[in-house]
Image (cartoon, rainbow, N blue to C red; front, side, top):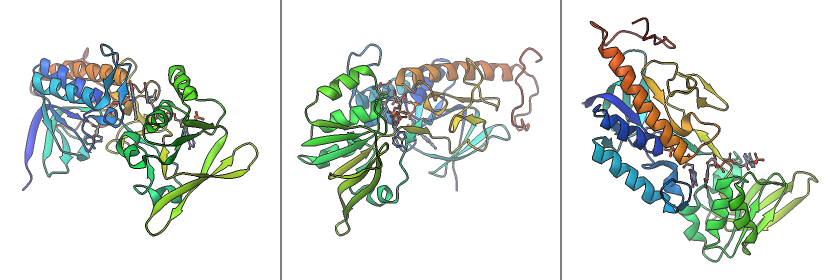
Length: 335
Ligand code: FAD
Ligand code: NAP
């Protein structure tokens, strides 16, 4: 039999946006429930040094997220290890179905499901995933001690991964499709100074090559995007670091999205097109995608949820199961 939990505010996601929403919603005495998902702590648990979290010149990503979790918990957030598989947002209270069988009933929902690594979509990439192809250097770098490694991408993640992997690898080749990196200048400086890293400009990954039995990577075939020339690079590990896409599976058919799936929120707000449903962090942000901006949006979402809930409570005789319909306007002035 399925268990049902009732809460005023359900927070889905345990990255900086989710935990910050937990801190603020708890302090507003909303007794929130936060469901962590399969990556407790979110994307920062897949990195090492974080140098742009205010107040910490340098902090390890996983440590920062443990502290955020402890903070949200200490303020009163109930933190649950579960994964939401579907949402029912047509009638109130809203319902979230947990993989555990638990149904979470909530007056308001804060979506903070963040983003996930993108893949190139090559058959050979898929074939060798987990057997030499990875999207997480901090998770898998250790397996390539003394080996040659290829990293693909040109943003902050690719550069940080390449730098981190020099701790293990004999050589790292960073393959980028243009002749200019998108990464911050400070990271580029470190990259260009590192003698273990070779930069391969204007190249795209064509194929990951390797052995069948045992399944394992031996190298990559890359193509010069300007000349069409193909070359082979030996490597035991291939790290794909070409960006992240919003984790919008729960709401992509229910809420308006744009710019490749990011949930649309009202200007200067975390309100979505469904009243009482708020979205924060990388799920909504195609532009900044930083821990501090995600945390800021988590704060906004909790404050807006509190205001929205108090507006509902002052409406006498409100039927909690009343269908709201998508896009129904919240007009507090009319109420
Ligand atoms: P995320 O951190 O993506 O967390 C999403 C959460 O949602 C996860 O806990 C996941 O388990 C949960 N979730 C997803 N789906 C479900 C579901 N269906 N049910 C329940 N839970 C669910 N930013 C910086 O400012 N500084 C840095 O140095 C930095 N380094 C980075 C290094 C790497 C390698 C990467 C990948 C990113 C880095 N970033 C950095 C970016 C930063 O990590 C993100 O901007 C930030 O984590 C986004 O926070 P978020 O709360 O929106 O979501
Ligand atoms: P990103 O900034 O979107 O960069 C993705 C990179 O991959 C770009 O260089 C892009 O090339 C390349 N790329 C995309 N699709 C490709 C494809 N199909 N084939 C080959 N190359 C492809 O992503 P990110 O580096 O993961 O960063 C995501 C966000 O997290 C950013 O906002 C970033 O600032 C943040 N972050 C911050 C830090 C930090 O503050 N230290 C660290 C990591 C991440 P083009 O340049 O040609 O488009």
